[in-house]
Image (cartoon, rainbow, N blue to C red):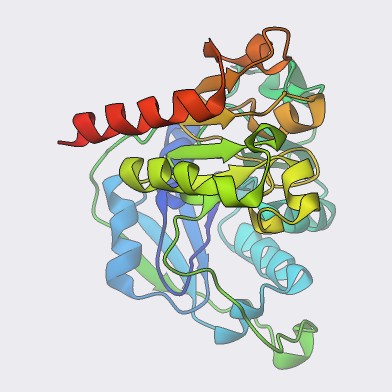
Length: 322
């Protein structure tokens, strides 16, 4: 038996979530007294994969088939099942992102495994195997017992700290045996956001709601985000009005994020919005309505006019940076 962790790459590079997964899988394997192996799909330089050795991963299986860049869910699930069989893995760990949400159910069926999504930390117990996750739009925790021998876990982003444990990493070639016929997804064009911090990677997020009143008022939010090195986000009404792009919409029907610090300016805090941001480590809310639901979820709240409070935030951020 062993633990297998799927390490995604973005244009051949690893991101923070990659090292969170490596840290989690290493600690999980230690608690179960099992070896841990990483699997990488797609073309990634061995030097880049070697960075996993800083977080306890001593062995990486690497399938350099460039067709994985299509992110074909079925093909990736097949490859991960093959990797799990080769490494005799009873537990597979991956990120609870868009790809993980699509691949994990397919993989669980192939492995006849129990699946728990958005796991929040290491198992509460190993005998029986019980893990914790958020439920009811992140308003409560549930302890889920997995009774099957094989298990697939997706780790919620920013829910596990980076734990350095330096080991020597050996990268081994792996061939899942897939051909072009196994990849049915065809990418005709790719439009990538450039020059901005992506929400999924942002440690700090500055977000605005309908209280910002109009698209032309977003300049101050963008100024604050630039000073703090933060990503920008918005509530659904804002994106529906066309004030901000839909890519910035966070909430149950938008992106689910978990930054270390989330600023909510002029956001009332409807349950649909809170469902996408409640995993944030710290929430700071500014709203003129003292009864706004956002204050129930906020760690710090300011009752006031955002157009009076925002300039003070910007000046304070400038002073902090200087």
